[in-house]
Length: 251
Image 1 (cartoon, rainbow, N blue to C red):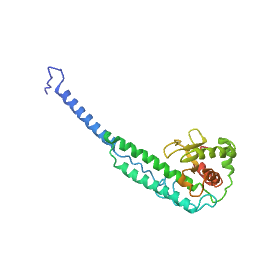
Image 2 (cartoon, rainbow, N blue to C red; image 1 turned 180 degrees about the vertical axis):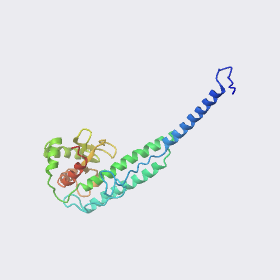
Image 3 (spheres, rainbow, N blue to C red; image 1 turned 30 degrees about the vertical axis):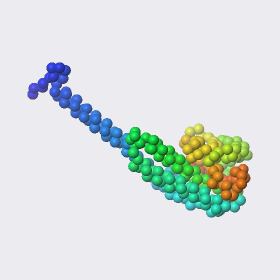
Image 4 (cartoon, rainbow, N blue to C red; image 1 turned 30 degrees about the horizontal axis):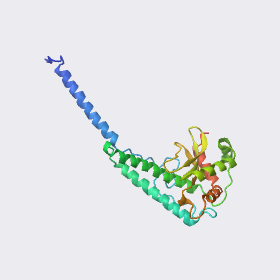
């Protein structure tokens, strides 16, 4: 078989053809990679997994009912119902945002729109899950703090009284949420403030106590936020706090 050589380059036709094949394959690979990069990720998870498995609400993207229609001394039926409506709107926003993300334009021309969708996804997801932790963490009457919680409180935060004083300050200064969280990365409890559903998130943390301090959560029943926060602290379901911490404790 005769293999001709280009006088200008000294390359054989076979090597030139092989180079063209490689180049064509590389171009096709780049096109395929670009297509894969712009495809919507699944992001749906499994209904049998997660810390909230078996509960309605955030993980299956459904509306969870109110655990208590009324909390005498803290929140009236009308006040809870109004806040629950705000929660249901957040669930709807999360659903529609995630549906939009499934077919969103991921090209550079649509970057600002895509960025806004991702931000709305995070904000609405936080809004949903924080409302659920808030509603489920309230008790109709005072609950004694279990020894398990009290011992961990002393280890991580000091006395219950000192934690309560600091959490009160958080709740009076935050614009949206005051939270006690457990951070598994430093294995510590922390109080934190959130001025919005995006601002103040402690990445990787697990909520233990959540207080909704937005006016829609309390203004129907309490003329002053101070009164609401004081009564909130007397209606924390500490048994629920214990259950939350047991799920994530790194012991």
